[in-house]
Image (tube, rainbow, N blue to C red):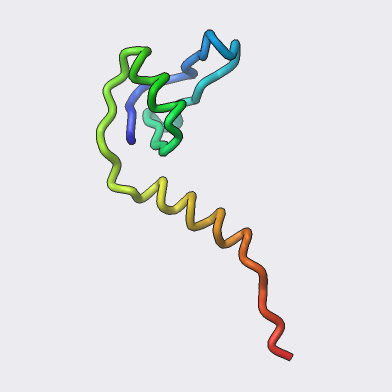
Length: 70
């Protein structure tokens, strides 16, 4: 989901930052972050999947091993 805002959202239960808005928004698939933002009063919109998809693809690419074709 994509949320708009500014600054840092604090998680009082964990006593640490829940998330930080960058360039006025945050796009996440983390259920804990989504639930925390909704409880804090933020309204989210379903994301187009671009940022979340890109992050997942980058993580998968880092985990992939190179094949030695010699």
